[in-house]
Amino acid sequence: MADTFDAIVIGLGAMGSATTYQLAKRGRKVLGIDRYSPPHGMGSSHGETRITRLACGEGAQYTAFARRSHEIWRELEARTGEQLLVQNGLLVISGPGERASAHGNAAFLDTTIVAARQNQVAHELLSDSAIRQRFPAFNVADGDRGYFEPEAGFVFPERCIAVQLALARQSGAAVHTGETVQRFAPAGDRVDIVTDHGSYSAAKIVIAAGPWIPELVPQRAALFTVRRQVLTWFAIDGQAERHRPQTFPVFYWQVPRRQAIYGFPWIGGGEPSLKLAAEQYDTATTPGTVDRTASHDEIAALHTHYVADFFPGVSARCVKSEVCLYTCVDDARFIVDALPDNPRVIVASPCSGHGFKHSAAIGEAIADLIVTGTTGRVSLDGFKFRS
Image (cartoon, rainbow, N blue to C red; front, side, top):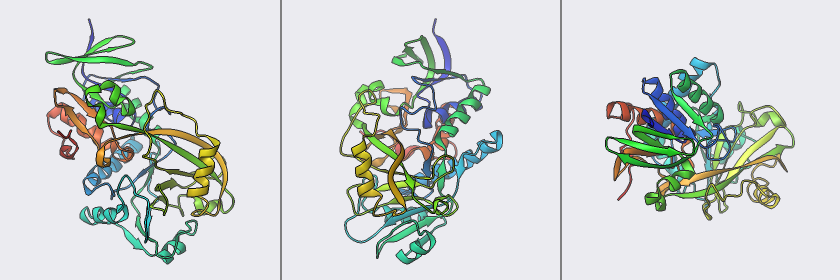
């Protein structure tokens, strides 16, 4: 006979670990399943740091999730003593002429400002000269302008996942790693799941499997596109201290190139380096076929086109690189919704490349929805499947 649970969460990255923790915290009998051992580097929730920002150029509707997630990270820090969130500020830069779109939005800087104003997010607008004076590591052009948000910063994704899974276990959750879900099907008032290790049954299941969602929900696969992204850490030639969090914010830069770039300060430990990535939306992949190694040519081209002109103190020597996956939906939006033909199955986590900052609050909302039928502090109404 299959083991039975109140809820089963498939995929234990950003959304899945948060949902499992929140369900266990509410006293539900919950099982979390992951084909690897999270936190791991095979999906979308790795690479040391992830940007968090309250005002989002993707839309004003995301601010409530980021704001609540900040509160949850602080609550988790207080419980565990782990540092999860660093609020060293965010700098968004754009300027005149043709600029790279950010998450498909050519007006990303302007929509970020609109979102800040609509949600009463503290911010400053900076001229090119103000950016140079405050943040001399950024080589901005004449006419560039910036948005600075002091409450923004970065989270440590691997720590966030590990902390939430540890607390979920402490609250009684079963966490199965190294186990792959093969299929699921409705069975009356429950959903049955078969894995390569066994069979289970639950009143609700949450599919938070990121780039594996198209495989698990093939009838909706056309909605999701998986994009390979390269993360790089380039060595800092000199003045490493001006690239530290105290003086160097996280950034999103609509450079006059094909792709926007984003990055992080040197967080300490190891060789001083700048973490930077461009975002490509030209080619699609799958988690089973993706090339998980960044080539020498890729790294060299990234420095030539996206580092050399904008960060003159950063060398072409790459300290390390990683590959991660974006699971993208049209309009860079999320889908957090029950399957139209199976309301006991909730799909959560195709985050279009900007989901980690919102994950703690979305996990809480999903848990509330399962337990009480409503989402509590934040609404998921804007993240439904489109017909």
